[in-house]
Length: 339
Ligand code: NAD
Image 1 (cartoon, rainbow, N blue to C red):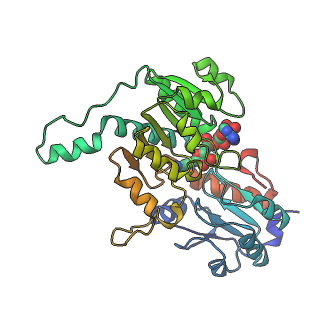
Image 2: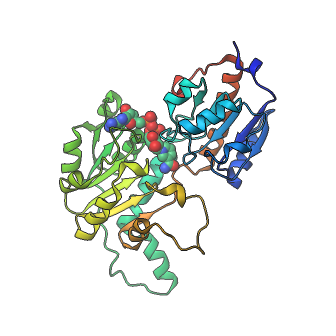
Image 3: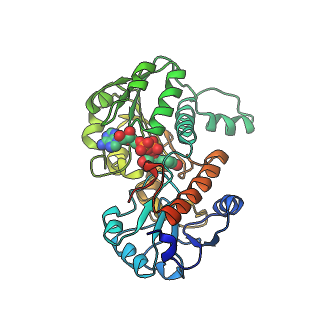
């Protein structure tokens, strides 16, 4: 039976919305009534949903069993993620309460891969410092020394859409590219990527870039032991999910000088910080404050996806997913349908 027969109205409730979400979803809307809430979805905010079969959520919305039960009681049938990662949704609970869950599997892998490379180049060549210096008429080069990327070994963990795009960029720079994934990719091997064990990635890479999803196997893949096995002065880049890194161990590694550079676009406790202007607030999270105090750490606030092309694709694919589920109870692109 089509879901459309069971819904009332044709409204989508969006949570954690920013002005750019409203702009892109309004631009590509094709007949839905859109309800935008700035607040995060959690067990307190479910109450905002009225007469809605579809909720649209983002990376830091809380979609655990308790929230899913409340959504089901409110008549919600579809949880549409407007992102690729889905670690914040309890898929088992969604199945149990008969809710469909969809996502946008590959809206612009290049957006994230290019941001990972931007972080590498910034940390290495210190263009952020050079920009400020020159504006102060300080034309000295002291402290700006970098290294050639050409010939360096880059280790990639997770070679899905983003990892694959990032490998191409690193190969383009003349790097030796090693990769670890639970499945190997023949096309990448043909391009010159060498698939190796996780231990070899840690042991042999000058730069390690994380592109696997956060799950029980990958949680804290960068931890005290893995850091100890890495090369001295290693650069670690995380544009995937904060939980891949054990923050306390990385802080230790930076203090000891074992980790030479850290670039993070994601942070384990980011839901209390990111996507907000907290410039007048006292930040209570001491770990992020410590991280931001290191001169060799670059933090961006989950912006790797943030390009015009990506936001266009996110809006188009999300509407398509919802339409397909409402009319056919299915989505042609199997990677988009989680439950
Ligand atoms: P994808 O599903 O195409 O690829 C993920 C890859 O990780 C797959 O090849 C899979 O086999 C591999 N993998 C799964 N478990 C693994 C394990 N235990 N060890 C090693 N590899 C494993 O996903 P994608 O589109 O490439 O996205 C990767 C991640 O990037 C997402 O899960 C999401 O968390 C993150 N992301 C971040 C942003 C951002 O703005 N910072 C944007 C989009 C996605």
